[in-house]
Length: 262
Ligand SMILES: Nc1ncnc2c1ncn2[C@@H]1O[C@H](COP(=O)(O)OP(=O)(O)OP(=O)(O)O)[C@@H](O)[C@H]1O
Image (cartoon, helix red, strand yellow):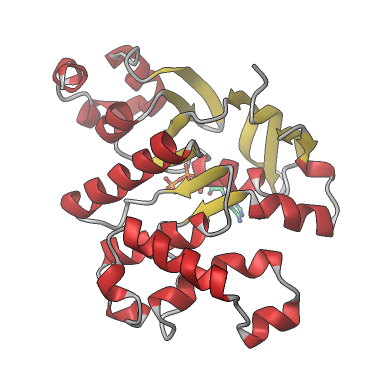
């Protein structure tokens, strides 16, 4: 089986001394649900940003659907980005626009600048937006302005905007870090559903180890820019958590046996 995403020996250096990623290698199979965990500053966001070239890595290789992402020119990169949906901690919605307009923004990557600026969307595109919003339980909110929504609702719009691109993969950067536990559960359940029912590969940065264990097929643990765990969610032990989180681990090793049992 060939991997959908392959990251090989990736490094990212900010300035002279600050190495955010060192020799990071892993692959993600089609349809997998993978969580990336690690302490604050470990390099999780930097890694996701390098994958879709929001920032450029310093060295190494990123292969997505057998394309060398780091070598792509502007036009090819735009095409690849339509296959990689991005979900952000702070949603990145346009507040003054409606839910459906924000959702349709996910189509901008496939349009000419002029069509995008003028907000030209076909009937089919609008129907697809409505259908996705229905699946996400936002049918009553379609014409509401984004700034009238709760955090959890905003994040569901974030997911809708990513899904309307017809992506192969979602990269989610701390999608639940600003949400209360109930809303966080709703978002994680939706992401899981996207993975299991639509076959879309999900890679998600998380702070919460228990959430990562509950939802993921595989966990990648990062400490100081290096991969220190890459294995099944079930196989993650207290020692692994110690290795990933260092001195912060004590607060996290609550009852790992209990989590695995749940
Ligand atoms: N634009 C930047 N310029 C300089 N250093 C940066 C920049 N972005 C990130 N860094 C540094 O790179 C390292 C990794 O940061 P990153 O945000 O990727 O970590 P993270 O694991 O996502 O942390 P958090 O969980 O707090 O978001 C940190 O030391 C950070 O200070």
